[in-house]
Image (tube, rainbow, N blue to C red):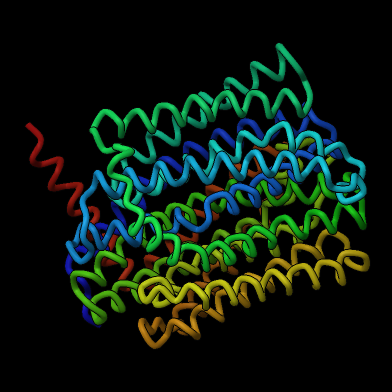
Length: 500
């Protein structure tokens, strides 16, 4: 298989940069997780999750799919295949997102207040959502700014900014909670203050480079980006329904107490697996878009095939490890009020990992701008998710909702792979999948036999032992990974030798 020279190394570097930032953000989330699960009751934590996913839906609507256009169109502007320059591009992105975000934020607050309270289960979420509507504007514009950073592949700055924003924001939220209002209103007031300050900084960062000029706003560019992004709006809204629709159904059928347990398990799982999948997606999408523009199909296909292999090698042990220690770790962090099953964790993490691999499988869709395919695929997945959640939640409880989400992500990934295969054909490496699965199961079996007390010590030993065992098995059984590790060690030795 031909290997794109240096492409894998660049992917590793950018993924590493994003991973450092994501790791720091995840650490902050893990630190705050036991605080919030104790400050709020289980039911309040469920309402908190309901408000957040609703805001996520409104933010997605406010972006109109334009944030998806940023990375794709920047690659064309940079390569010279589209007329215009950076000032025109940056100005069009910022001012269009400010105008659209402000309009959607105002409309959202008004519409939410007019909806029947019964839709929110009389939980109080309705008023909280309306008061937190300014976050829609902040997050719409913030998404545009961060996608510009991502398009420029400034992974180091991206990670530094998002990590600092997370910790400063957490400090502000905690100060408001403990000194002003120890309730959901205090939480969202602190969040608005923190995100407003962060947004002001990132806009100022680019403004100092003289990249914003209202006179350089390009209507043709805006319309082209809107044409590309609008079909993706439907897909993003549908994607949000995968998270939001299930929460509303759980709240309606089982109540806020069960919603709180589900939200805690979902957030906890998301924090831990984001280190791999979020960083991976942030790094790989702009890379394969650039590679397609410069090197063509063959090298892009080879790069994606190799990337999929390494993604599987990392994703499968995460799933096995979460199945082994997830329920105990959640109980340790969130308190004994949050007791969930191993199957719930497996279904949730499995769905997240399937979604995490989608940037590879759907590469052909984004390269050829087949946005309608994305729309139909995600919409079908969202409909399946809501139908299965409504059907499975009563007999299976929150495990049924998690199983519905896993099935929905699988459908989306399969659909985008099928329709994108004509442009970029990425094959599932079945032999590697079987091998990595076997190694992950061996690790799972070994980890579950560790029975130490207290619980915190046991979990630390299980994590360390699992990582060491899987890493050793991988090096013993996989030649490409041995070669990659050898090259990494050789580079480290060379750097040490070059030091004065």
